[in-house]
Amino acid sequence: MAEPARVDMTKIVSLCQRRGFIFPSSEIYGGLSSCWDYGPLGVELKQNVKRAWWRAVVQERDDIVGLDASILMHPRTWEASGHLEGFKDPLVECKSCHLRWRADEVKGGKCPSCGGELTEPQMFNLMFKTFIGPVEEQASVVYLRPETAQGMFVNFENVVNTTRKRLPFGMAQLGKAFRNEVTTGNFIFRCREFEQMEIEFFVKPDSAKQWFDYWVEERSNWYVNLGIKKENLRLREHSKEELAHYAKECSDIDYLFPMGWAELEGIANRGDFDLVQHAKFSGKSLSYYDEETKEHITPYIIEPSAGVDRSCLAFLCDAYDEDIADGESRVLLHLHPDLAPIKVAVLPLSRKETLAPLAKEIYADLRRSFMTQYDDAQSIGRRYRRQDEIGTPFCVTIDFQSLDDKQVTIRERDSLRQIRVPIAELNKTLQAKLEGEDLFVLPPGGKIWKEG
Image 1 (cartoon, rainbow, N blue to C red):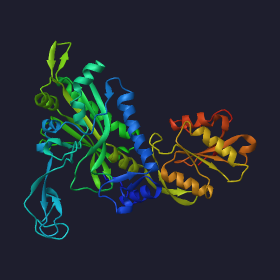
Image 2: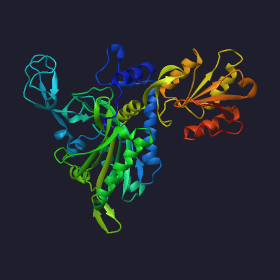
Image 3: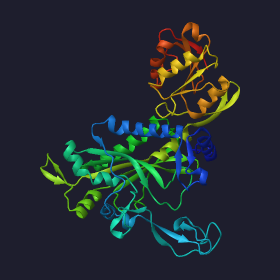
Image 4: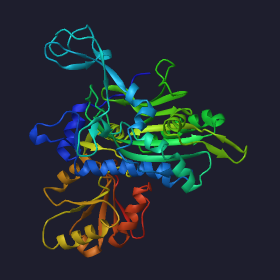
């Protein structure tokens, strides 16, 4: 089968900066490599992705609870987890320009930048180091966490005791992680500061395979349900050679990014490695008492781990489209309503004093229910294009007829269809449409205005 078409990354980057999704960090100073700032629309998209994930894995389930562990953890945490010893990349350094490169990504034995001679590979730890307290001495060294997972492992006993959860159960956490990546790039795909969405699901060892398969399917469906095209996703099982030392099994959900297939989310069967290690290094028992067998067991852990930033990039890439509307070319984002930064745009046909009060009254009412934007600059066509480009599902147009019939027009982003509804029914109608109801299912007093 032919590979699906890919969007050009330069178009995504341009759109993000032009419309206020994502900016280079510290741009007025020339930026900081692989660090990014989320603008007014980007922060809404990011929050919506996180809300959708949290709703799916915590709010709508009774077997997962939330956690927000500290970014700074006791240094022994990273000894137990293996990060101090094993979280390293082999690097080579150019003897001429002194740039460093990952050894496995250099071809031909020469510096990719200047062609100079390279040193022998040396190991480089990816964790950021900092200090606690006023004195920079070895005793006060701590690390910015490279993953959120360890905070859930060390809180296993606390969560079991306070929630009285029984196996199988899980913890979910959203939070920042930091990795001093040598090779970055591809926009927000790989950054040094990023946000993770991770689940640690604790199960009885003999049920681990069943739960691993369950989470692979569950997490794949989450992306599809939020609009990712199935043909742009694939499942890739890790070979024995590439499995992490602690993993019994691992599969990646890959997405067809502009630069090719790459990991969007990983699901791993971590076995009992983490709880055993932390029990060993802390001296605390992290076993679970099984009421059925009357035995203490160490649960296995199934870990679905996703990146917020990569998810945002995938949703943007998958939603990007160009077409012809009303005889003009337009750029639009087919974002799922749950993810769209702006749900509704209020567009008065004119800035005239007779129309503005009603438009602003409607705007004030809608913004209590939805993230709403008011736009009265330039022609109505240009305003429609702006909203299409940022993914707004519905535009509400107030015209001079609205002053007499107390009705407004709702325009649908993707189909360009329009209906006219009473202002009194507007809020309820928009809520139904955002939840998936067909536009042409009309409220009392509503009528079809444009077939599209």
